[in-house]
Image 1 (cartoon, one colour):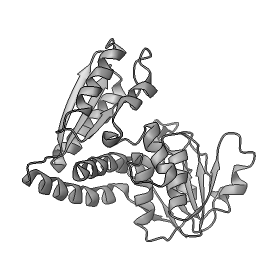
Image 2 (cartoon, helix red, strand yellow):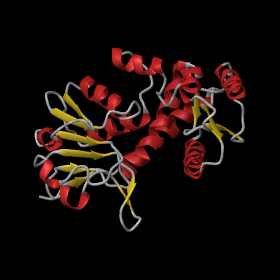
Image 3 (cartoon, helix red, strand yellow):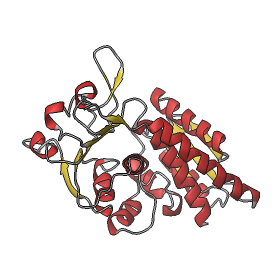
Length: 281
C-alpha cells in the first residue's frame, strides 16, 4: 500500500481563493484587511519568510504594512511601535518575525500585541483562549495541520492521535486542537522512553521535532495519517522533514510531503486569521 499524498500546496491554493473573495467583500465595504509585518535585523531566513508573507497578502487583496528595522533597534522603540499599531483601526493583524536580536525579549514583544490582532496566535492570552476552548486565533502551523487532516475527510472523533514534540508554537497547541476534535491525544517528547510504542498505536501522527528520520516505517500503524511538520536538510542538502518519507509512505494511508505539505499552509492560515480579525471588527 502506498499512502495518498496530502498536498498542502493544492489545499493552500483553494483556501487562498476563499481569502481573496472575503478580502474583496470587505474592501468593497471600505474595510480592506490589513496586516502589519515587522522585521528586526538581517536574518536571511527571516527575510525570505517575510517576503513570502508580504507577497501572499498582495496576491489575496490584503494590505500589508511591512516595516524593517536595524538589529540595533531598542526594545522600547519596538514596543512603542507595536502599541501604535494596536491602536490603528486599519491594521487587523500584527506579526513580529522571529527570531529577534538578543537584547529584545520575544515574550515581552509577543505580549505587547493586542489579543485582537495576534494573528500568529502566540500570546499567552491566545494560548489561554485555545486551552479554554474559546474563540480566538490558533497558531498558524497547527491550524494548517488540522485543515490538512480535515481535507482527507477523516473523522477524528474517538481516534488516537500522537503528537511528537511539545513546543509552545506547534506541539502543545496541536494537541489541544486534536482534543477539540474529540481525538484521544498522546504528546511525546525527548523524555519519552519508547516513542515507537506510542506511534504504532496511533491513527494520526504529527511529527514536529526538527530532526529527520524521527518517525520510521516500523513505527507507523498501517493506514495511519502522518503529518510531517519538520523542516530539515538531508546529507545531500535537500529539504526533508522529520519523517522517513520514502519508507513511511509505503505503510501510511495518508502523508504530507516535505516540501509542499505543511509549509504552504502556515502562511495561508496567517491570511485566514487576518481575514477573520477584519471580519470580527
